[in-house]
Length: 91
Image (tube, rainbow, N blue to C red; front, side, top):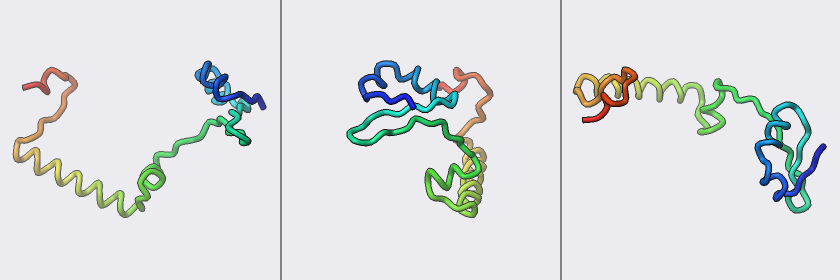
């Protein structure tokens, strides 16, 4: 494992992160601890749980509420569909 001080890591952070992303063992010394830089997998299936503590049922309920809200706003004419041209959003 390559170990670095915080200062050394900060000076060339992109390099060390690329090495870690490619499977190299890289650690940063923080006080008496070594903090490992490691690539982690992000799974969208559990993102809402990990970030917000939501159960699948709560995610489903929130999705239904959001969809209903959007439908109400479209019927009221207070929102427009985005068609890819940001200039259409003005005015």
